[in-house]
Length: 83
Image (cartoon, rainbow, N blue to C red; front, side):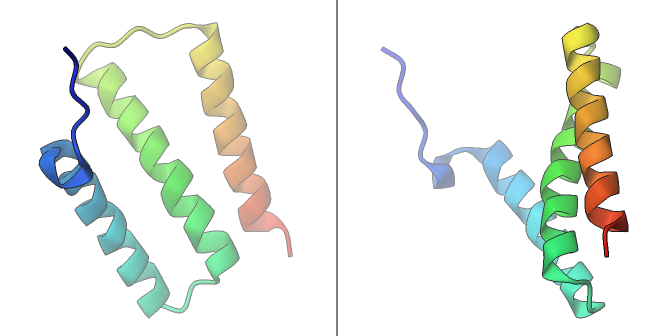
């Protein structure tokens, strides 16, 4: 039977949280606006993880994946350039 891991039992989750929190602490120490910083870190970590999966783990890549990547990048662009 498949057993779901609690957050504290999953070592990958702990690594992700450590990196994520490190980026948050560094950005906000520099005075970045919350409305820009939070989406940048959240979407940026997903995009980075996806790219590492494709390049290192040789995961599949298709048009749907490319569309999601482009929409994420465009969303980050809109958040960062809107005043």
